[in-house]
Structure formats: C-alpha cells, structure tokens
Image (spheres, rainbow, N blue to C red):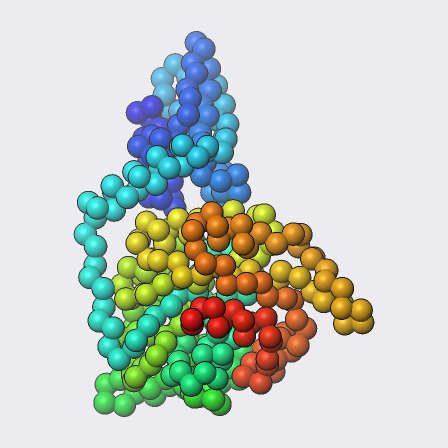
Length: 342
C-alpha cells in the first residue's frame, strides 16, 4: 500500500491510496494481485494508472509477479471520493473571483465531452438572447480549438484602445473574443500547455472591454482540466448550461463535468440534449440516430431543469459553415431559450 501511494491519478491529482481507489490487495508468496476501482469504466487514463501501479509493485523486494485489475466504483465509493476531494479543496489556497464589471450574468456552456455541439449551442443561445433585445457577448474559452468566429462569419482582428482590447462584433451586434481572431490564419494551431491556456482565458475576461452586457456566454472546451478550472474558479460565473447527447458514453463523460461543477459550487441552471433526433424531410418521422433520449433522466438525477432536446439539422450545419448562424431559426431552440431566460 505504501508503494501504491506513489501512483497519482493525473486528473484528481491525489494518490490512489488516499483516494480509496485500491479496493483490494492479495499476496501469495511473491505474487501480488491488486484491484483498483476507477470512477468510470471509460476512464481514459486507465492504462497509465495500471502501468504505474505495476511498476511501483515490481520494484519491491520479494515480488516475483504483479497483476493489476480494474473495476468501476459503486455509488458509495464514488460518494466517498467526492468528499475527499472536497476536503482537499478546503486546504488549497483558492483564488478570489474576478469582479463582475458591467456584466449582469455569466453563463458557462459545459459538457466534458467533445463533439456534442457546445459551440453551436452557445452561438444559438447568444442569437436568441440578442433577438429578445439583450446585449450579449461570447468568450470563446476553447483556446486550442476555437470555432465561434467561423460560426458567426467574423474575421475582424480585435484592437487595443486605451489599454483595453476591443472585441469583434457580429453582424447583429454580439461581441466576440476568440483565439482564432488573434492568430492570423485560422488553420494555425495553438500548441500551448495548461498555464498559457489559463492565462489567455483570464485575459479574455479582464483585458477585453465588454462594456455593458446582459449576458456573457463562455464556450468551454471538452474535459475537466485547466481551462474549465480557470473559468469556474476565477470568473464570477452565475451558472452552467450542461450540453449532452443521447449516447450512454456521452452521459458518463458529461457526469464528470457535472461533478466538477458541484465541487466548485457553481449551480447548474439547465441540461440540454443536443443531436437528440432527426426528422425525415419527406414524411416527418422522428429518427433517433443515437438511441433513446437520456437528457431528461440526467437532469432529474442532478436535480436540474431540463431545457429540452434539439434535433440534428442540416440547415444548422450549413449556416455555421457559411458564418450565417444569425439567420438560422429553430423552433425547438426558441423553446429552450425561453425556458432558460424565464
């Protein structure tokens, strides 16, 4: 067990013994068998954790063979690990929240999983808010994979005036700041480590002249790492809109993001299921390409409002490709926006 204390979960940044992930250890002469319980069966770091555990045990004197198996935590084990993370968080120096400036409400669009349409959801939500007469801005926090400028057809380079960055503006007046507006060519990759990403997000908030806004929407990248922590710890976020899709795998990964938001005490204002279905253009039949809807079930499990389900719409894809998202309309999303803003 002492040897296994040297194995650290890279995501949780604590050793697997302290986290209670070592479910059992069996020793038979020189043979050692260990079972490590993971937070989910789709843990992307399982190979790394198993490898480090095997390496740590093989170095011990008298050990001739090592077998490391993995299992999935039960609800009791998962609750225990969340409590330990909460206790650890209390001992860490927490940075103070940045001031709200002239922004009334800040919403973060979060998933945890890539490919569920967070950027298109963020864009459509901003457009619906603007149509209701609200002043809206979008902070594209996906530093290494920004797409907001393309969706809005915006290419103007932000400039500095009196020490503040003046953001780009869409055709309907939505203010936008994104790394893609600063790198010259949109195909140029941003190859940065976590601290640089976090610094850029902070500057996008503090150094940009957002003016008076009713809503600032923050489009987060997938995952639960530096970018998400920077936004939820430093920015005065009022709430999170969780975007998921029907696949069970998506739900498992999105659950990680939900748990992170709870650990950081940021309320979830709603759950939205994207890519829920497609309608046959000829007969109107609803086809669920990715299986039955699970969005409402997820919302009930985390005690959050269910905002609704959005279809897969070729017109939306075409509008995003042309940079004409502000011309796109969708009755299902109008209902979603109404629920969120009510």
